[in-house]
Image (tube, rainbow, N blue to C red; front, side):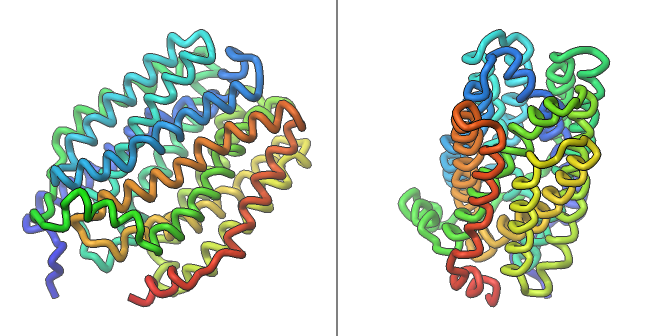
Length: 395
C-alpha cells in the first residue's frame, strides 16, 4: 500500500538520504569535536565552576529561544533546506568565536552561536522523516540519530587526540573546517515540501504546543538533557581531570559514552519500539542514567569511569529516540516542524538549566553534589503519569 507521505521521486530521495547522513555527521562533528575539552578549557579561561556552567548553559539557552521559532517559520514557509544551510553557517561562526575567546563573555556568546546552529536540528529531523511513511517515523528518528551518534563517537575521540597533539584551540579549527564541508554538501539535498494547508496558520500551529503527548515526552526529555549536559558534557570531564585524565583521555571518556549510546539508539528506534513497550524501555534508560551519574564521584580510576559512562550512554540511547519519535508520531506532516520545535525547545531548557544550576551547586556544595542532583532528577519519570503516551502508542 502506498503511503501518502512517501516521496514521489524515490530515486532522488534515496540519494538525499545518503547525503543526509554525511551532512548530519559533519553538522554535529563540527560541535562535538571540541566538546571533550570545552568544559576544562572554559574553566582554564574563566576560573570557576559557576562560569563553566554559564558557558555550557549558553548552548541550551539559545536552543530554548530559537527552536520553536525555527519550527514555526519552517512550517509557515514549507521550507527546510535553507535552515539546514544556516545551521552550518552558525556552526562555523561558533568555532571561529571560540578560537579567539579570552574571557567568559566571549566563550558564552560563541557557544550561544553553536546553540543557534543546533536549533536547526528541528528541520533536519523533520525533513529526514518526510522521506518515510508515517508509520515509520520512529524508525526514521533512529536512523538519523544513529548518524548523529556515530558523528559524536568519531569526533569526541578525534577531538581529544587533536587537542593532545596541537593544543587547546586545535579542535575549534577542525570544527570550522567540518562546517564548511558540510555546507557545501548540504546544497545537494533534495527537499520534500508538504502541501499547503490551512493547518499551517500561525494560530493553529501554536496549538500544537498544547498536545498532551508532546508535553509529556518533552518533560521527560528535559530531565534527560539536564543530567546529560550537567554531567557527561559538563562536569564529568572536570572530575576526570581531577583523577588524572589527559586531553586525549577526555576524548576517550566521551567516546566510551557515545559508542554504546550510538548502538543502543539504533536498537531502540528500529527494534524495541515494535515491542510496544515504550514505557518499560524509557524507564530502563532513566534508571541506567541515574545509576551512572550517582556513582561517578565514587569512582577513582579512569577505567572504571569509562565503564560508568558506557552505562550512561546505554541509558540515553534507550530512552531518547523513543521520546523523539513519540513527540511527532501523532502530529500531521505539515505541523511536524512546529512539534519538533516545541519538543527540542523544551528539552533545551534542561540543557541550559542543568549546567547553570550544577555549576552554582558545585562552587558552593562541591563537585559530587552535581551528580547527586542529576541522579535524583533522572528518577522522576518513574512517578509521571503515562496514560497519554500509552494512548499514543496504540494509535
